[in-house]
Length: 112
Length: 112
Image (tube, rainbow over all chains, first blue to last red; front, side, top):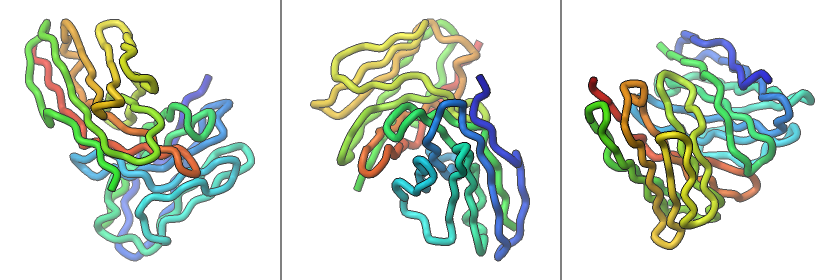
């Protein structure tokens, strides 16, 4: 059984650019959640997707957006990048909305 | 505001010691309490606790939840250097979807 995978592993962007991060959920999971983890802090919830619909959102501005595809993989898009967006972005999949979330290895984003 | 607080923030012990990590929470729509171990990137799942007073065990690790006093503990007995990691606790709240609210983490260092 394949676990949660994310791509790319690392990314360097400059302020104002746009970025797309990708996540493949674990087999049999229909829910994907995205988190941002700044250095030295716990992950913060960005949003959750369930069966291709956004199903809850944290305190992040609209320039953070996402998609979930029919195969339950997901994308996180961030527009107009700011320096504070530099962080580890984690994707987690779960069999359903309130079940245990299993994390991928993350994408480390650096904004210069 | 939903809040999860972990203590201590960091801990240094020697191999063979027993450690207790603490997690308190104040959240609305509480569903469950989860513990994760984070070594480099991906938090790996340890326990999910839903019922009060029922201990969950996995090898040298165990955890329990007190829903009256709103806290959980994670115990690690006979620590090994491989237990060195950041331990994250998260409260799952359910409101249109399952969202994890994380604490800051406890950084555990086990010395030989």
